[in-house]
Each structure stands twice: as structure tokens, then as C-alpha cells.
Image (cartoon, rainbow, N blue to C red):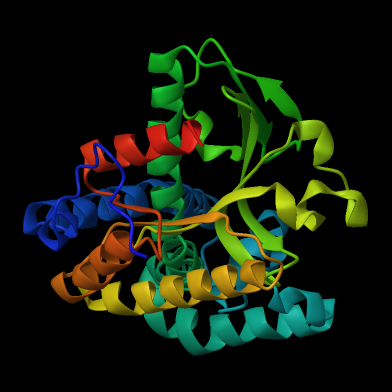
Length: 321
């Protein structure tokens, strides 16, 4: 039998879930600014390449400058990955091709040509990072809101550093901590452990947000880990940070399919953990589907990532599970 929506929810209709044009615009701008930040190292490297290259008078002399070799290989169009399959002779051949076919024909502007081609190759690397940017920004916003609710509520927490894998106590200065969190533990009613992006064995698929009745000690390696105990799962959620309306429906289909798989997998074990969805780009048609699932409690909660009030509410809900 259908149950009522969560008491006090901000979502009274499907329209409440739809991403506004203003929030879409703000999301695109935030993405653009972040792309510029991650492009900074490449631009600085290009400046260094230009300065070092100025010590030669002719393109063919570049081969003799040891400190330029990596930069020349990049300008030749070779990625870091491709270098693993090339000998030193192969690499030299690629640089010679760059010099003969592109730098020498550029005449006195050969250094500018070198820099342009260096940036072209680095642009591919930037594009790869940018494709993962939406997900990263979505995770950061979610985690920052979750931490804010912890702080306002006076709830202590521990967090797992993505770089060191060490568990750390709540810091006095938590600036940018959201960029490094791999998991977070707190205790209110009971111990709760939220893990980002893990393969849930019972589902045999990666899940964006997983909440268990556990402590950091329970998160062991191999078969002894708490993740292999289905009855310890409290809630599982999908987080989609992409802001482009054109991809919204596809993101929802992926998330909905994942949650159906989660529910089916646990139901076979007579278990019923909660499921939830947080998305940045929510269009009208998918909002109607999400709202229907909330009404029938096929899904337990949802929020628009661009709506601060909804995001705060679902984080508070998570903390109190």
C-alpha cells in the first residue's frame, strides 16, 4: 500500500524538483570557472616551455635541450600513456617529425607553433578531466552540505582521506575537506558509515552513496568487510551532478535502473534498505517520474542538487537515518 511522503518534505509536487533556468545557468558558469582552474597547470607549463625554447635559434636545436624533451614529446601529439609503448628512438623520431613538418615551416614563429601544439595535446587531457568534472562538483556540493549540517547540529564525525586512506577526526578548519572525503562516519542514534563510489557485492555494481550501520573498523579488506553483510545496509543513493538539460533524461534512466537493481537485489534477501536520488539537472518529465516514486515510496527520498533547501533537508534525513 502506498505511504505518504516524508513528513516536512519540501517536495509537494513534481514541479518542486525541476531545475530552474537560473540554476542551470549558474551550474554552467560554475563548470566553466572550474575548468579554468584545472587548466592553470597546463598554461603555466606552456609558458615554461616557451621560455626554455627561447634559448635556441633554430627548431632542430631543440633536440639538444634535455630539459625540453618531455615538452617536445607532448607537442608531438604523444600522450603520457602512449610513451609507455615507445623506445627512446621512437620518441626521437616523433620529435624530428614535429620539427620537420611543423616547426621549420613556421619560420621565425616556430616557438609559438611549438606552444600551440603543446596546448593542443594538453587540451585532450583537460577534456578528459572536464568530463569527470560534473560528478566531482556534485559530490563536493553534497559533502559540503552534509558537513554543514553536522557542524550546525554539533555532531562530531570522522572522515577517510581519499589521498592517504587514513581516518581523521573532524578538523578545526574544514575548508576544502569535501575535495578529499572518501567516506564519513558519525553516530547519532546508531553508528553510520557513508561511503562514496563503492561496488556493493550484493548488487555487483558501483553505487554513488552507500550508508551502512557500521564503524570505520568494520570497513576491512576482502570478504571480512562490512560491505559483504547485506543486513548492514541502511540506504543507497544515486548522485548525478551533470547540469546539462540535454543529458538529464539519460542520467535519470541510469540512476533509476541502478536503484531498481538495488531494490531487486536486496528484496531477494528479504531486505529493504532505503533508496534516494539527488540530481542537478531534473527536467519536467523525469520530475514527474521521481515524484510518483516518492508518493508510492518506491523511492524514499529525493532532492535537486541545485536547491539548497532540498539538499540540506536530504542531508539532515541521511544523518538521522
